[in-house]
Amino acid sequence: MDIAYCRELIELADQLNFSKAAEKLYITQSTLSKHVALMEREVGFRIFDRSTSRVELTKSGRVFIESIRDVVNRYDTALKEGRDFERERETTVHIIGPLLNERIVDRVTTARTVVAAMGIDVKLSLADTGVRDCHESLTDGRADIAIGFRYGIDEEGLECVHLSDIPFGIACHGTHELAHKNLLRFGDIAGQKIVSYPMAGRARYHAFVRAVCSKHGIAQEMEFLEEGALCFPDAERSIVFGIHFPGYARYGGDMVARALDDTSDSFDVCVMKRKGRSAPAVDALFRAIAKK
Image 1 (tube, one colour):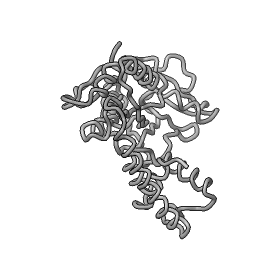
Image 2 (cartoon, helix red, strand yellow):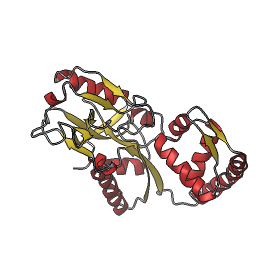
Image 3 (cartoon, one colour):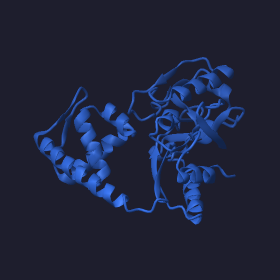
Image 4 (tube, helix red, strand yellow):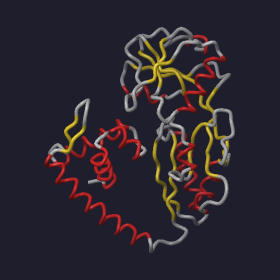
């Protein structure tokens, strides 16, 4: 039984709301739902009764949650005692960002190897946040390092180093007119029905996408999905437009994800951390990630 999943169950039991619990845990609602389903299969009974309108603990679930609270508390005590004996140079660095991108996560793991060769044993805690804005998580201390998007502006209080550019792209049904169009440009998006990620936690992202749309004469409104919904276009009629995410192809044979051939605008991918004093391991890992 994964102790992290136990924490998620406890948070959901406290909130009785998937959206609020997922926000507190800094994971997506769909990820939380999958973890709950895995735990229920493991224990062999339903922990939560859930419908479209409410979430409630089952009688068995209530007994189970109170028991695992004790388990988690004892685990936390044991963990603290163990960490007290760790060497001072050993530390955990919390990194967030679109870590499903293989190039990005490879850069992080390579940087860890570089730092380890310097004699600093860095432990990584990685949390994939997709295209969520990472800035507040850095400034309030929930994360040590973020790999995210600068959107053409400097972020106050943050140190940012450019890593790469990611192009704009679309995801659509394989029969959509743009799925296999030769030389896909911004102008081809005009007039299309566009859906995009939920608004919550992505204000900077959506503001940047809207500004680029306006620049290229794409005037139609976007439809923002509900929090926790998978950002899929509906059949042949619509497209997802924004950052190019090749991973869409994994979700089914009818899905096509492709980058725009027009790269006059793109997403500025940066590694970021808070300015000022921070732990030596954080500084070392930041520099290693930022190094060309």
